[in-house]
Length: 185
Image (tube, rainbow, N blue to C red; front, side, top):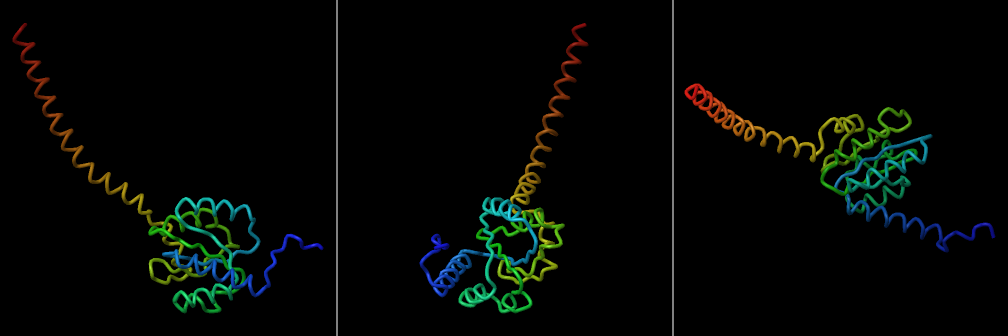
């Protein structure tokens, strides 16, 4: 009895359970991207998983055939499901939030220079992107960064006006004080 830890499900039931899990992930995902990896340490993926969890994204390794079955039910574009995309080992990053740039940045930070990890294709904000274009999104500021820049640019003229008005008042006050000091002497 070597396999005591094994669940009492048949292989068919395990496949059906996996397809249902993928369907749940697809239902919650607003965007996703597929990549392949060979000879990468498990610890690297665990670090990426933790980072992705902070931005409402999830990394999952899937079997190509099971992903294809689950994706067909969810009406994903056909060019995501072709054999030229779904080959070798496939991992999917399911992005549940609106901002898909932050997870792509995290992915590029973790594996950008690693030749063993290659992006296959992405379905971002209801558009399909080829592998070469996906990592270009990492150069774009995230929504949070853009919000911060917008607030800063809106704040800047107000501070400029405040300092312009107060500096003239200060200069006037210093001038009047100088005149008053001169007349008192």
